[in-house]
Length: 294
Image 1 (tube, helix red, strand yellow):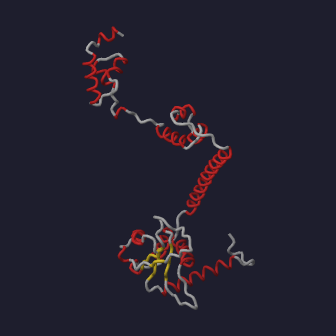
Image 2 (image 1 turned 45 degrees about the vertical axis):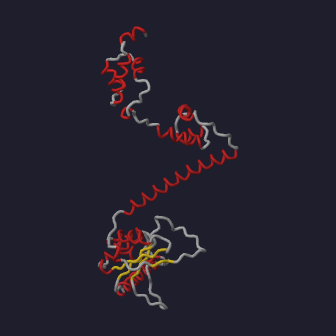
Image 3 (image 1 turned 120 degrees about the horizontal axis):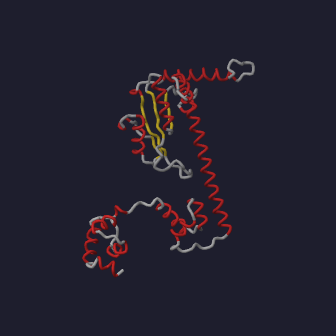
């Protein structure tokens, strides 16, 4: 070592240069090449106490795992449980969490409950994956939609969700209300197919009085593509304290009411279309009629 130090007799001067270069952002290799230092021990002593520049710190792919492992350890999980949760080796887990206090031994019944919860969470994830696959496959089965397809869908949709004329309450008007954005989109596409002009449509929001009515109005106006100022006065539904509402939160936007101005004639045709469809469908169910057999 004495011979080595002899080569670097002005150690303090060399250290000052090394520290200056380090603070300028140079890496160890750059400093070594700049000062012609070929001994790592000497380089370590020259840079002792000086942190490396930020750019030389390479991101560690396991940093996230390490942080999660420490979080789980603090929650009281064992090495085995953390390994199951994260899928990494127990050797790595030991290095990451060895400075943390050991968790207290849990009651066997608690461990059993924890294991059961983990199994159930896994089962739910598997079920949800299968559910999404089924939905995606079904969506692909629809293929293209013809004008007649949309016509039939629209008639059925209106008869299920739209206002209807009653002998005791004459309502020959076309009014539709729904909270599902896809249903609203399909309904508006159907009205367009029927030749209903946009200027004949009237919009109104129906929502609970405790909700953000202005936000709901802006949301529905943007969806249907009109200025919010064209909306009719919002209908507020009074809150019943005996009712536990689940349709709350920032995603609750009430319902959109869509009315066709001067729609009496259209209503009569809708009722006629539905009557015709119902008659044909009913005939398919008669035992002696095989014409509609698929």
